Length: 127
Image: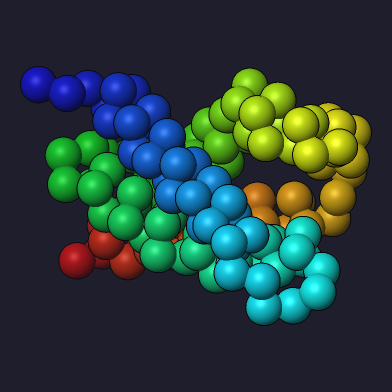
């Protein structure tokens, strides 16, 4: 049997993988001049189905309050950004930790992730 913690981490990592995939893939399709802004727009829209999918998978077998689940996902994603995203994708392209974590769009997307998971989890648990 999969415990809540293992399920939480697995679905949190899945959300992060899907989010990074949206971010990275957006660079392959230049639509606007500012590629970084385009990547953030793709991520902002891509996080919606990604977080709903992860939340849905969690609640198939997991049990947790919606606010705890949402906060846990944000923490997991931030830790993975610290350990993997910045060193592998941001620093090689001329960025650094302070630029990544001081960008307002980072916090906007983190808040978006929290509220999408929170409200979708409330919807799923009230059914």
